[in-house]
Image 1 (cartoon, rainbow, N blue to C red):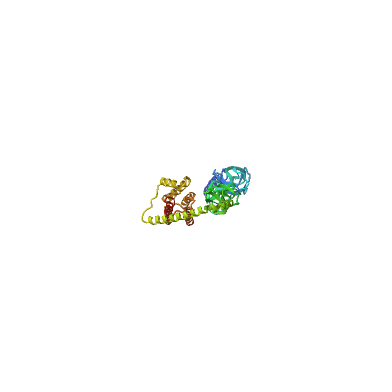
Image 2: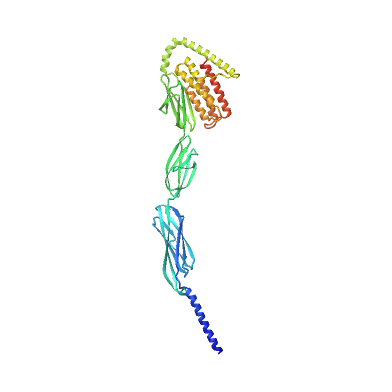
Amino acid sequence: MIAHKRINLFILLVIFSFCFLSVGLANAGLGHPSLRVSAYVTPSEIERGSSGELIVTVSEVGGEDWAKDVTVTPSISPLDGCTISPSSKSTSGIGESSSTTFHFTIYVSKDATLGRRSVHISVKYYETGWLDIGTFGPDYSTGSTKFSVKKGHGFISISSIPSGAKVYLDGVYKGETPLFLSKVAEGTHTIKLTKQYYNDVTRTVFVSIGKTTHVYETLTGYGSISISSFPSGASVYLDGYYKGVTPLFLSKVIEGSHTIKLAKSGYAELTKTIYVYPGKTTYVFETLSFATWLLTSIFGMIALISVFIVIFVIRRKKREKLTATKAEEITEKGKTEEVKIPEPEEVRERLRETYPEKDAVRLANAFRIIQDIKSLYCNTNTKAREISKEFDLLKMYLTEKEFLNEVESIQRKINAELREEQRLSEKHVEEVKDFCEKFIEMWIARFLR
């Protein structure tokens, strides 16, 4: 009886164990794996002559079985200078509901065509049988992604003499020389260099991938020339080319040595070599001599008019002495009382009483300009360039050497002590005021009394 019960119990245990094993075996290897492929390229735009990375993730999403011997093979279309390394990658298996990531390198050659590329990913895998016995397949899953091929880059090194020139690349400001530009797109570009008081320079350059293009330029500067003569009205030739008559101001003259020739009928030609500096004004003032033939003719008449010349000289000396005496009296008087300055209309009318119309207009203009300088430019807001320009204008209406000397003296002092864009200091303002007052007193003493 006891033995019979034991046999029954053993039979029940065998049946129970068989059922348990059947459930386990059913879950082990009887399902089918399902793979999903996702991929992307970084960066999404790859420069010619460089590389990017393809990242592929293969996931088992069915949850029923694992995938065996998984091989990932990417390809690019159109190829056109692009390669993938390695050509494929493998793993022994991907478990249920798990994933594996594969990394590939995409190389883009320097001569690859520009534009979009498609990447096709093929995943080959196998599945196993019951109790992982046997291998079935292969099966395939696919995926895709895209990337673009864009221009590569090089470098540009830019320098100039003098340095400090502004640099424009394809019309966009980049800085001042010396300058090194990185990551400049391959191909043709326009470089423009600009600097105040220098002519602009524009160059076309070609940038190759990974290489440095060197740009070195010597800028050509320019200045100006102020030309006056006694007498005025002399024809001016600059390096053999006619430019006008004195007084004359020439702007944007290329820096360096130049030849100035002055010619006037009845006077000997005068030739002078000058040097022009960038941003500076070169002043030329010359007194013309009578021509040789005219001197010869005049020599024969000297004996006839010698008496008149002596008389004229004596009278002139007396007049100059009287003028100097009056100027000194006015100066002393000015210390205690203000000199009465006549109105412009009064000046012109009084000058017409003594001088021809042309000289009267010239002298009146000079008087007006010196008053403008005193009233409008004797302050610390005035730039050296502005007052120098007014002095040039004043000299245009003066032929009297004593006045020209006074103007050139104060002008040279201002130009020597200040740059063009500097403003007058209090000291310079006082010096200009003193000059104006002295000039007005001398002018009144000479022409109105």
